[in-house]
Amino acid sequence: MIFTLSSHNVIQYLQQADLCSSEDGASAKNLPETNNKNANLLVTLKGDRHPSTGARTLLVKQEHQIDDHRIPEEFFKEWLFHQLLQQFPVLGNIAEIASLVLHFDEENSILVRNYLSEYLELRDFYQNSDIYPSEIATAIGSCLGVLHRATFNRREYRDFMATAPQGQFRYQFYNPAQGIESISSDIFGNAPTQALKFYALYQRYESIEAAIAQLAALWEPCCLTHNDLKLENILVHSRWNQLDNCLVRLIDWEACAWGEPAFDLGTLVASYLRIWLESLVVDPLITQEESLQLAATPLEVLQPSMLALIQAYLNAFPMILEYRHDLMQRVVQFAGLVLIQNIQDSIQYDRHFDNISVYVLQVAKDLLTKPQESVITVFGIPESEIVKPFTKISKHPQANKEQNLVRVFYNKTRLRGC
Image 1 (cartoon, rainbow, N blue to C red):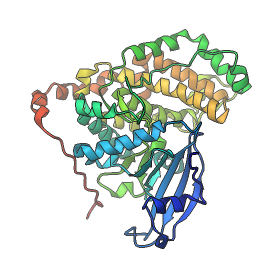
Image 2 (cartoon, rainbow, N blue to C red):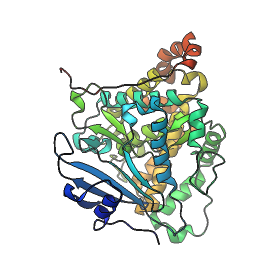
Image 3 (cartoon, rainbow, N blue to C red):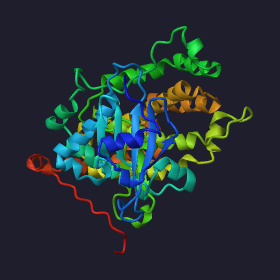
Image 4 (cartoon, rainbow, N blue to C red):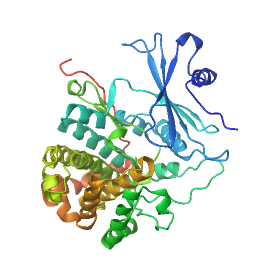
């Protein structure tokens, strides 16, 4: 029988794991579940542990069990990522991805990590402040570019990420370019009635399946990727405008694997587009085009951040343009794919589908089937203008010399003016 955590026994569990003691005056509370996969508990340890608050906070997560023989695949990946950073300091020194993991219990599918109380989820920050500073997007793009560049075509990292949980074998890495599975009559009992319109529309657009199939066929994993880099998995420091670096932290590496850079970038772009799409004004008396233009958060407000993100990424990793001449088009195609996956998740977990979701599907269709035109729509400028400043850098003769160098990243966070 697998042990199940709750707010009543989590402190005792942490004590047995030597992660706290009876003198810590620990308190625990349940956090709302964002999906049906994990239970999350926040444990606050009092005492002389934190330099400013005198307290330390732990996030304790446990995967919901399907049966007693289930292997905790996702938490294993996060633990594997933690081990990767320990074994290869060149990656561990990238402050924005530094591991927060303290403990992994494979038998009970429990993961414990530090909780960064001075940071906020980026999506919450955007919603509460209604500002989209380019500095934050630049920090994300730079960090992601450094990670992809540092692991690009490095076999030692690829082999490490191929490690499988005990008792399992891993023959290949997961290709994220997947469409909707074949629809059977079971859909009428499992999906809400209004969601059937989504499946009907999806089947009507054969061009969507063709575009996704092409994405899958051309998928070439070449570096370590996060694979779930939505805004909810990015933290921004509460004093972001006072820091020179480490404004952001990338968290929740449960889906990380050897993958394709464009998917991480596309997931980020999709998250920004969702802010625009979720603010649409939907009314039977106005057209879809008018609805897109009347959004409470116009696309034009988000474009500077998305452009800064891509430019910072290419500045950190210009050589990717040699490997992927169609990088920008694949980014917007993956963004369209992620938007469709978001609709599926909303139907599956929240049993929700509305008229806005129909518009999201239309936008996703354009991103997938018209990538060249969509680059201009998303970023506000043509693809040629985005990549032009970096094409000369990517052909610089230094590339061969760097093969024998170990890139070390030491970012020291400090207050501006200090």
